[in-house]
Length: 111
Length: 112
Image (tube, rainbow over all chains, first blue to last red; front, side, top):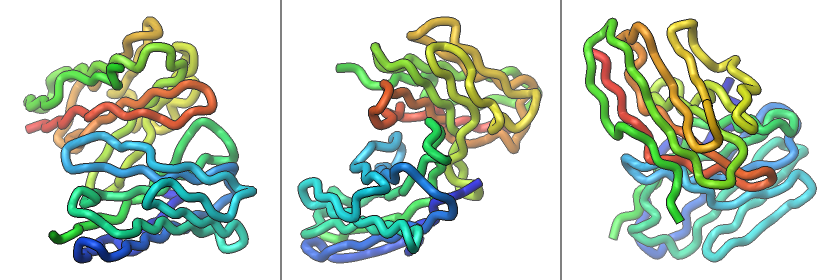
């Protein structure tokens, strides 16, 4: 079952702008992760936020988590053409090793 | 530091044929995951192993699919007989306890 659902499905912005992607999930979680996938490649882990955290930063990435709304957002600031990729959120199913991925947001950053 | 290595990268075969996908996880990782990615269904977990033992195969679509992990450095996913609806990109991922999953670059499978 698809637990995480990203929104929007596709996003096109200009270089230098910020990109915000959202993720909603259905059940309780221990943590939520964001991954990036470049065309024709595997997924690459970006950042993990635990259920007791509300916000986390890593370089140009900012992730928020609202467990009361069962939602998370990923903000990429000062976007670059190299950020063009699909972005997926993933949640653990009740703390198991299994990750459930959403269908992703396809981000295009135009130079 | 070599990542997760999958082979082949591309496979085209006719329906009814046996297909074997291979994965070499990162050395020292003790969990291994097989996923399937399609446009319609997204990324689905098929099966995962911990310390070479299958833990959850509830995502394996049917008996035509099987997976093995004979040792810590090798795993296979086999489809026999293959069908056109099995066409997808198959990913292998590995991780060490408490760490994120690392993905290979996948095998793009086309069943004609």
